Length: 77
Image (tube, rainbow, N blue to C red; front, side):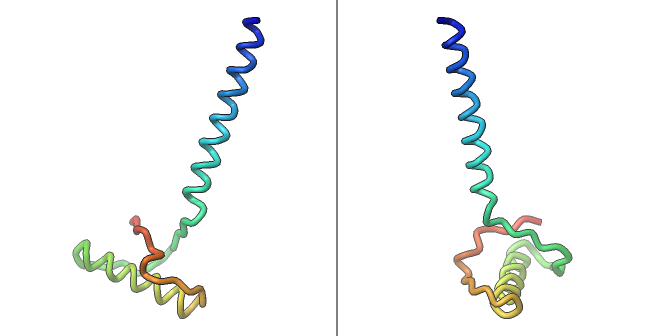
């Protein structure tokens, strides 16, 4: 009986780990990393504005992938 409980607990742990991995993957599936993007030398708010404008131009005009400002969630440097 104890061995069966142990097997069930092991399976539950395995399913939890897989679920966590899948959730983490789903959270990062839409992330885009841009290398060699221009650096802004202004304050934080101005830098965010410049980064947002750079991404909008890059996607809409260069890559021809239509996005709007609301599609951009955040920036990380």
